[in-house]
Picture 1 (tube, one colour):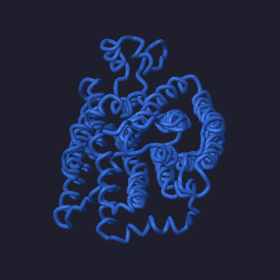
Picture 2: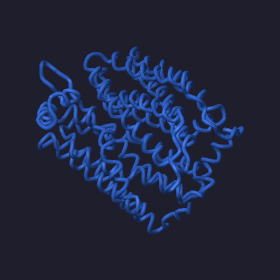
Picture 3: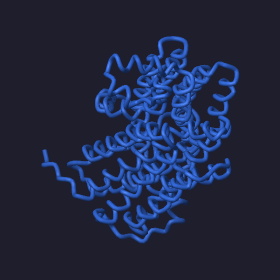
Length: 428
């Protein structure tokens, strides 16, 4: 076996800024339901903002990487920071729905520019001896930031929203300083890229009708319920689960210091913050290696469909937690997270391997289109319906519908692969 190549300094610099960016991004995204509540906006308004934010966040990366190839990673990183910082700070001033929509669109645009640049840096600074470890470290850094960002933002928003947003802007400012001082452009072939041509190439992959239908199925039946979970779960836990009992349960198991880390104090009573536990980052940190090892030798599509079934069960458990013991909601979140860990890496790997080797990047770029479908629809459908169920005193119904939606997706994708046939995975 070859000796593993050591990682260059820029690899660690890139992963450091990744932690900070995910810290800021998820700190804003996971607490945003509470911000909209405090401003007096409806769930329908929240859903519209969520859809705009997520769609832009995942559409911009389709072409952002091409600009980085053309102008250099460091320059485009700095552009993303300069778009990020004032956009976040603008949240301390906006009051109208239109102002909030514009601000979140701007933050989504900045995040979209940033998104492909660190993974691109990791790709350019690893080789055959260390790429698996390199991307494993990168994935861990993503989830470290995504886990601690909502915890910190939730603690600060209980004091003042301005504190929470200034913390996020400060994280991006620190990223700017680190990048200016320590980020060295990774070595790569300096090819003059025609941005328009690259975009046409990415969209040309969907002229394959079979592949286009597959992307639509993924968008509607995987990414839509996936984003609906993140849109709805923090508000569901915070507004409908007995967060006092949940705090007491966590305190008994893990101690006061841990329970208080996840909580806020209201009238001398501790309550768990919904956004502190209603995400999957902390579970992925603990279980991703085990899950990946378990499924790495198994066929892609059966594994993916099984993961969808696990996620659907997680939705059902979250729903029943409202009328059982509050701690059950954590079990539901863990089960959903296991489903995510099976499905998300597996389907992205599958799309990479069904592509001709010279078009792997184009196919993965096209995969963002499926993500965009789910992102766009998740807020304007499920968050709106969640509001209607809340008004009728049955907020748990949203989880049963999401579970049914996912099971329908299993059937649709199974029928598609049996009638149209699975894609042929290319050899390495």
